Image (cartoon, rainbow, N blue to C red; front, side, top):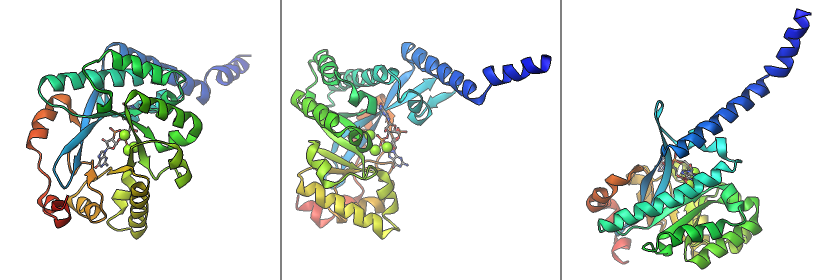
Length: 292
Ligand code: C2E
Ligand code: MG
Ligand code: MG
Ligand code: MG
């Protein structure tokens, strides 16, 4: 009898599934508490023009300032809430926090465009644009054109029609849009036609592979050619070295983001960084740059 009870207990209460389900609920609870306790912060990574040295904007990237574990990157907690309504609450917090930060920078005389990442679930939200409009209305000093939304190419492809509608209605608000991690979603020319984004962000995997893989160069050239044909701006992600930048410039790509320019930083560090930053001389001294 004892043996049977033990077996049943194992079967009903202690399977790996139950355990992971319980852990999942606990994680959700921790994240919910963290949002309440204001433990999330945004760091900001600059986007620059390698020719002119202009800082064209910053991307807001979420971090969790965990009381015990320290600063956690999004990979440590975003996957937990991916399919949960909590991701919408956090998404709205991100937009709100970014706009508030822009107001602080404005007060310091720094006018800078900010991009925020939009999760797949946010994009599927029926009243996303309406909520965005309400948040913008709470920040009348910020022009909607200084806000950019980064939508993952893969989440746009999940429901192309919904994505293209959201993108269209956000554009109507005056907000601009970028397709993030471009090249990882196997999208074709046809898809791009339906998505009225102004910017394409080339995924870092291609930039990383560029120095030793001719295929990645070919992909980069293809994306750049296509973007030009569609009148879209292109920015390369993951520019880690001077060489990456040089090669991209040779291919006609002037906009860059990556550790080779700057790592994501706390908001307070940005004004002095922006004042001091100069492009690498081999980037800005190119003849092609001087013709701009
Ligand atoms: P992403 O939007 O493609 O952002 C770029 C990621 O690459 C960031 O990682 C950034 O720190 C990192 N990165 C930038 N330059 C370099 C480089 O030169 N080399 C390397 N190896 N990495 C570089 P992070 O901050 O860990 O964010 C990872 C992803 O999490 C983001 O990818 C984005 O998809 C997501 N994410 C971040 N913040 C948010 C957010 O507020 N909301 C949503 N929905 N997603 C977010
Ligand atoms: Mg992004
Ligand atoms: Mg990206
Ligand atoms: Mg990414």
